[in-house]
Amino acid sequence: MPFATITGWGKCMPPAVLSNADIATFLDTDDEWIRTRTGISERRVSHVSLGEMGRVSALRALAAAGLVADDLDMIVFGTCTMDEQVPNMASWVQKAISARNAGAMDINTACTSFLYGLTTASAMIKSGVISNALVIGGELISPMMDWSNRNVAVLFGDGCAAVVLESSVREEGVLADKLGSYGDYREILQVHGMGQRYANRGWVLGDTEWNFDGQEIFKRAVHGMSNACDTVLKARGLTPDDIRLVVPHQANLRIIEAVARRAGVPMERCYVNVQRYGNMSAATVPVALVEALEEGRIAPGDHVLLTGFGAGLSFTAHVLRWGERTAPLGESDATLPPCDRSALEMVRGYLAAKRGSRLAPGA
Ligand code: UT7
Image (tube, rainbow, N blue to C red; front, side, top):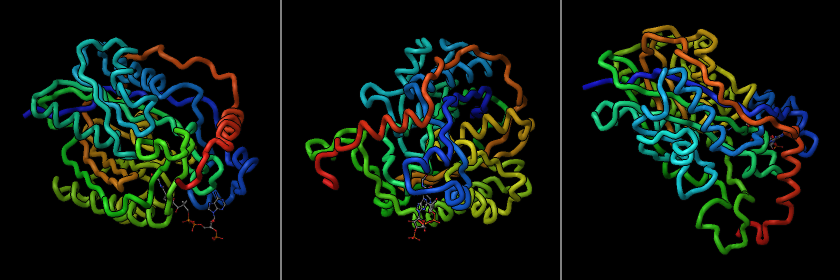
C-alpha cells in the first residue's frame, strides 16, 4: 500500500490587520482581557473572497511541490464559510487554477475541516483511488461574524493555506489518525443565521447570532484533543519524546498549553501563532504548518503531531512523518490584489450593513 506524503505547502494571509485596540473602539473589551484570556493580539480581515485566498494558497502549494495544476487528481477544500454552497468551493479553485483533471470536493467539520480533509485525501491516495491531492483549509469569517458580540468577535480571523499530498513508497505522511465528534454537545457552538433552518424566519443570511458556551467548549476541546493525541501516539508506539513538533488548532493559547501539558510535550516543541491571527477555523493548522516549515521547525524524517477541535464538536489528531524535503521546489508569483481599506473600516462596514437587518431576533 502506498503512503501519502506532503510535498508542497503554501499560505495566503490577507494583509489588513485588526488589533485588539481596534475592536475596543466598538465593543466593551480591551487588549489586556483578550491577551490574557486567549493569547490573541491581532487577526486578519480579508478584502477578497474565500475562493481568491484558496486560489493563491493552491498555486503557492503547487509551486512548492513542483507540480502544475493539470497534474492534480483531487482538490479537497475544508471550510464552513463558503462563498457559495452550490457549486462548491473546490470547483471554484479548480476553475481558477485550471486543474482540468481533478475531482473537487468540500468538507465541513468547522475548525477541523482541513484535518478531516487530510485524512480523506490521504486515504484515497493510500487506497489507490488517486495518486495526489491538494488539500485546502480556509475561512472567510469576518462577513458572517456577529461583530456586536464580544464573546466571539475578539476570537476569530480570516486566512487560508494548502498542502499537496503525493503517493510515496516511503513510510511518510499521515501514519495514524483519529477523527471524533461529541455530537451531544453540538448546541454549545452554533451559528444561527446560516443555512435552510433559518430561511423564512426573519433572518438575513450572514447576519448571525452565536450560541457559544466558551467554558464548556474549552473543556471539551482539551478532553477531545488530548484523548485523540494519546490514541494516535499509542497506535504508532510513539512517546511524546518522539514528537519533534505539535501543530495544534489555534483557538486559545490556554487550550494549547493544556493540551501540550497533557500530551507531555513542552511548549518549546509546540507551534503557536494564535497571537498574530486568532482562530481562523479550518485555516489554523495548515497556516501554522506552513509557518513552522518556513521557520525551520521541521526537519526531514521528523514526527509531527497535528490536533484540532471545532463545532460539532469535532476533534482530531494525526501523527505525520515528514518526508525528505522541507524546502519548496519552486515559488509562485500568485498574489492578492491590493487592499485599499483598513481592517477596521471593513468591520465597521459589516456592522453598519447588519444593523437592523435581523427582523426577528432569536427566531
Ligand atoms: O474553534 C472553536 C472556537 N471556540 C473556542 O475557541 C472557545 C474556547 N473557549 C475559550 O477560548 C474561552 O472560554 C473564552 C476566551 C471564550 C472565554 O474565556 P473565559 O476565561 O472562559 O471567560 P468567561 O467566559 O468565564 O468570561 C469571564 C468574564 C465574563 O464576565 P463576568 O461574568 O465574570 O462579569 C464575561 O462577560 O469576561 C467577560 N468577557 C469579556 N470581557 C472583556 C467575555 N468576553 C469578553 C471580552 N472582553 N471580549
